Image (cartoon, rainbow, N blue to C red; front, side, top):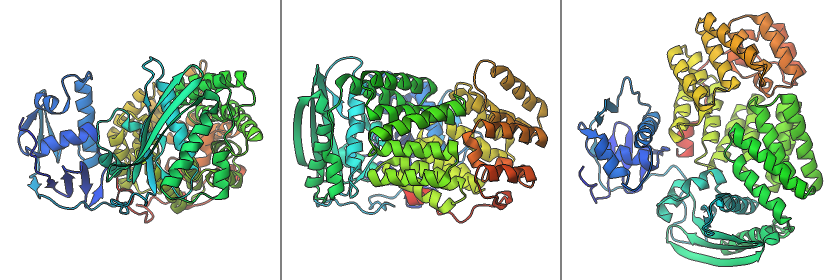
Length: 613
């Protein structure tokens, strides 16, 4: 394949532009979320429009010979992500045609525009003055121990440093989810800074040897590659929190951000930790961040082990609360069991340390999903943001609360704020898409869910929610295809299977829906099946009496999904029933007729344009 031209250029097709120099794909000036190998594959196709680009040519150009990956799977995912971002289809392609077993061909004409200035949708960041730093990213710290099994330590220390910096209100700090995507990335600092929309980065390394820990960190102004500050710390592991706070204060001084007395107090009040308890806590957070049923249960065990070593360790209780909440939300445990334990753990954490922003946010989730204490939930999220202005989860979860209450503009604002701090988060991107689904803007929702899938094809939740949208549009084959992917990615969870049953029901395939009902009842002998999921299938079958019977069981078990009753399109056919309004009142939601209107949106702004994604 011909080598890429050294000329810095822009390749234009249809309403899209690929800036080869910056590595950015834009649509009408708005930057789209496409990076890494998918972006490189698109560039290779654009250089040869109308021609066959073979699989072997793509492998030789993009996948180096010493890279041990499943090439077929990797190329398939890259093409799927490109199509998702472009809004293309494999069966009726407008842009990329698959030539089976041979390769791909780019269909439209491509115009080479030449040099031009990028029109970033973000506010311009400083490129020359290192003192004007308002946004920062902590790149994954390098583990220099050389020992197997120590990956968790460097990752967890990176997260902890991000958390310390995020307490500074005047500094926007990129969240862990987005920062960790640059682990091992061979990209220049200016490129990373552009992709994350930050002025500076922190990079460094960690080394733990026995009871000693050494952290080296340096602050670099990305545009000029100017090193602003560097320091190495070597202390007793008990003082690791003090090291993180010290680094945060030094960075604030270097970028000339005046800390408030409260911020200085929070950063300066770093207690010593029990080494063994803290190590177990770091391992638990490492597992928690993987967000699978199995990893969350491993995290729960590690948090408990940390508390066995130190029963006064507040972050350990906060971590347990997070685990129980997520297990309850995805029906891995009965709601009554999961959220009751989550509430007890969160309250214990705050009893020991009321300054834990994460624990307040977690308690807000309990109040939102389990207690249906809507004002109480909002107050906890507000307290979390006050303690840590960079707590992404607080904005993200508060946005969900506002959505449940029908406060759609506020929900969008919160999700948008979360995404500015975590721009590569497929979870937040998927939830932004849910906002458009709940407002019945289905065409827009398809676009947004496809953008999420383009970020991470293996994120099952995005496929499941996209299926909801296709159902409402009457596109049942497309819905069933997305459900199949979502079920496979979820490990055939009962949560996902129930969605398939509902789709069969509203598609007129009653036998298929009843077969899944039978399957779920059989599975309930061995694992938890939410009565809310059973109710949704009966609702799809228009068996209203059975639907309300199971919705009442869901109320008795405090299912978190009842909080969506006032906005979920799948329940629209039940809204006129007095039993529906009575149930809404029992969970503290104000009955509304807004959900019965199937309308194309409520004037929400273009998320991709606003977010630069």
